[in-house]
Image 1 (tube, one colour):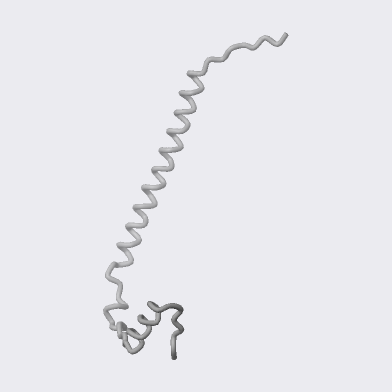
Image 2: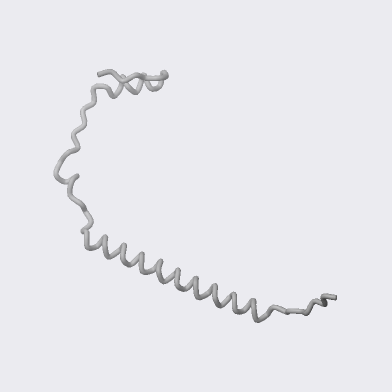
Length: 80
């Protein structure tokens, strides 16, 4: 089966790798090197940190709104 090259560099690459054989289906490639429990624990820790950050951001936003509203100077406008 020929691969159609569009330019000169593609043609050279096709010629170079046309006859290469690749065999990377050994058993070691199919086994995960990280346990599922460790991955779930890391994801849970990350999610908890993000949840805590969101809660702190919400509380900080409310505090900032309170500070801005207490420091606001309101003046009466004469509507005459």
